[in-house]
Amino acid sequence: MLNSTLRGGLLTKLFCTTALISMSAQSAVTLDRTRIVFPGTEKSINVTISNDNPQEAYLAQSWIEDLQGNKLTKGAILATPPLQRIEANKKSLVRLSTTAEVAKLPQDRESVFFYNLREVPPKPTGGNTLQIALQSRVKLFYRPTSILAEADTQWSHKVTLTKTAKGYLLNNPTPFNLTVIGFGNSKEQAEKNAFNAVMIPPKSTQELTSAALTTPHLTYINDYGGKPTMSFNCQGETCTVKGE
Image (cartoon, rainbow, N blue to C red):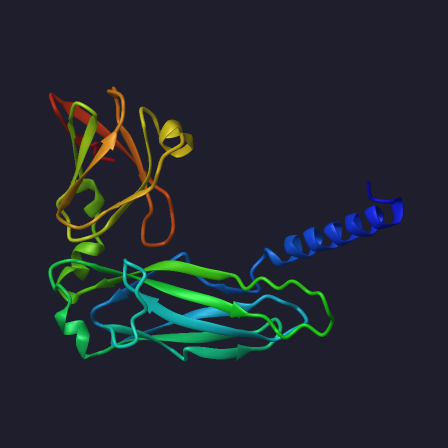
């Protein structure tokens, strides 16, 4: 058995490590939005990043990935600077710029990437210090010029549901990606029930496993990070969004 002194020392180390992990779990370097929309009329856009640590400067790394998680060093969109120093309690900008590769992207629908932001904490001054570098990852939607006008409409209301043996087939006929985060028989159920979020690409379908619903409701994420809920009216096997 451990003697009381050794046991006390181990418990103290465990407590300190747990406390350090807890304090480090909050990211110091943060992004000003939860998703990014890049309009095709622009050659570049800026996003704001902040160092919320009140005492120490941090380094911030930025890069773009495709949906498979591959880092794009010569892709259609690049993030600059890839590495920068941000002083304590200060903000900075990251520029997202298109390259010649953007012409190879589909022009009749959105393309999706990931923007990554990783903090690099300052070198610790003391020994036996555990550091955790946190990373933010948000979707980056490139929206070509040809569909920008439609983006300002209620395009999500074109989505339909078709009853199937397992639930509903969601049809997204639009040129936009639809990220569904809730589904249920009422607004409350769609917003609060457990649901595995799914992104339905443009002009495609996705089956949603569900029991038969009297009045299907669907919650999605809009361009501003909001979470509106749409109510459907069913006639036979097909359900369409109710007008407001």
